[in-house]
Image 1 (cartoon, rainbow, N blue to C red):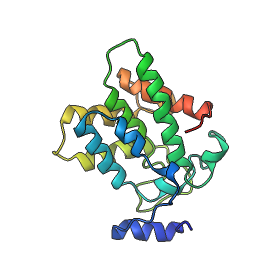
Image 2 (cartoon, rainbow, N blue to C red; image 1 turned 120 degrees about the horizontal axis):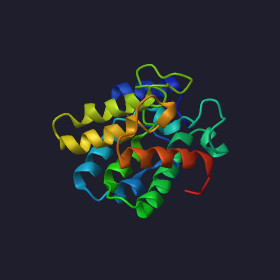
Image 3 (cartoon, rainbow, N blue to C red; image 1 turned 135 degrees about the vertical axis):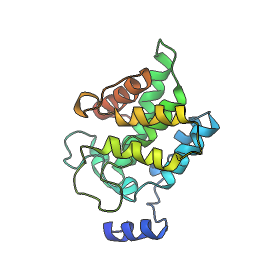
Length: 191
């Protein structure tokens, strides 16, 4: 049985974990694809600090932009898994030099604060959720991780909405994360 939003928020504040038990919500497979130990560790630490809504909320508050199963409980994680899967295809096909593990991390984390930071979750997607997600990475990273890696992950998360998000796309990594998100939203595939 899923926790209510109030129970999930209380659990989060008290450091308790009560995630749904379905395997699909688990991002271990995506973490294992990250070859850089430092980026994998940072990504895992960010997922451990994810607000409770990340694990049980739908990917879309309106139901308009995602596959039907992404509009159910746990849909946000299903969507994140799809984005990671599309990114793997783009990484393999990309003609320019890129940082694959930056892309993998950013794809796993891109919607981590879609409904807020956990202190006051909203019913609707926040327009500034890309910046909130990038901020979580900065908070978790502190001075423990390589600054360039952290900056690149933050940039890719912050710009993942492309022209709809208000932050310019600067790098190939930013563009790949944006394209993976758009494609995963439009093309429904098994994960």
